[in-house]
Image (tube, rainbow, N blue to C red; front, side):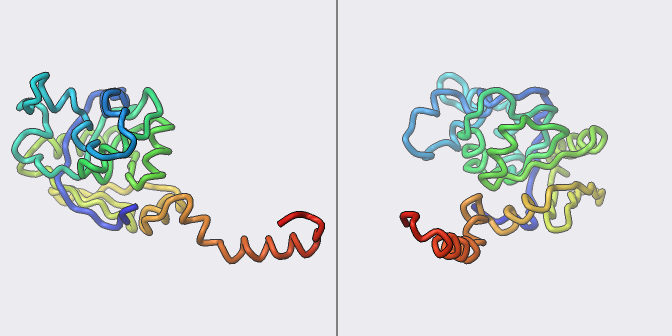
Amino acid sequence: MQPFTTVTGAAAPLPAANVDTDVIMPKQFLKGIDRAGLDRGAFHDLRFAPDGSPRPDFVLNRPGWEETRFLVVGPNFGCGSSREHAVWGLLQLGIRAIIGTTFAGIFADNAANNGLLLVSLDPGAVSALLARAADPEGNRLTVDLPGETILAGDGTRHPFEIPPSRKDTLIRGVDAIGTTLDRAAEIRAFEARHHAAQPWLAR
């Protein structure tokens, strides 16, 4: 996974509540045998008209949000089906963090397992960041994961909390396998002791 330390970039507002994974990644993009092309699938029906042309009214297609790195979203973002493709597509689109009040549980797990930072803030802070994100002249944020702080363009700081283990894996860019390999020496030592104590067990 790509490590996340301090990232600065544009934020886009998506204030609707209960944006589900069918909206984030429509079902027609689940047919592939790999992850290729999922950036086009992210928010496809919101971003593109039936003829494939970009919808000019959708925020990610508008000037000032061309290289969005953060989404500021409404409550219960990522609800619906468990499709991991939703997270893969957001990452391919360049999204590094999503800021909101609440996130669906399976979506949050998929995000953690793939290096997408989810930041939960109180409704007042999210409202303030939604207002900043809606202004193309002031929509840049800096997310400092080691310092657990979001810095808005007007100098306002929004502290957040994240479980230490999740913070560590995001900063180092390691997944669950990587964290297991951190303890490879301990695992091999246990195996050696176990087989020495019970030699009749097949190796």
